[in-house]
Structure formats: structure tokens, C-alpha cells
Image (cartoon, rainbow, N blue to C red; front, side):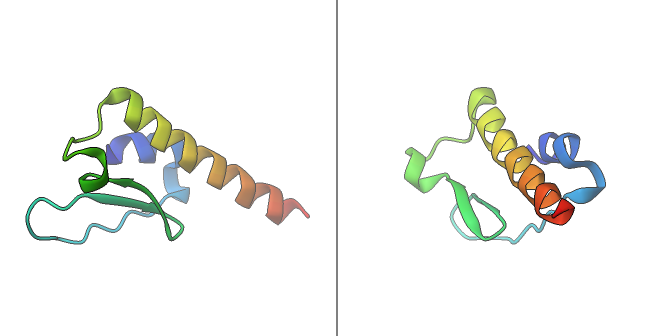
Length: 70
């Protein structure tokens, strides 16, 4: 999953991995939670779900670039 995010944003993406207990897996983009394994019935993200998260990363990066252009 991390490689998908790096593929989307390259050097503009920073990842922070924080160990959790009991299989916790949450993904945040700019402080917004976009994935929580517990909220998705304990399922790890499948390829379509990873693509959705990658789109969120792409959109967030695009909005940052647009804001910098103004």
C-alpha cells in the first residue's frame, strides 16, 4: 500500500508508520482518516480500496499544487 502512495506522489509524499495494538490499521491523509480496518469489518484493503485511497492522495496533492499556484 505504501508503494501505491509513493507511486502517486513521489517525493511529495511522507509516510509515518505508528505501531498499534491488536491489528490496528488506520490511514490518514493530512489529518483526515481515509481508512480504518476496524470500521471496514476487520478487512485489509483490497486493490480497489487501495486505488480509492490513492485517488484521495492524488486529489490532496493536486489541491496543494493549485493552492501554491495562487
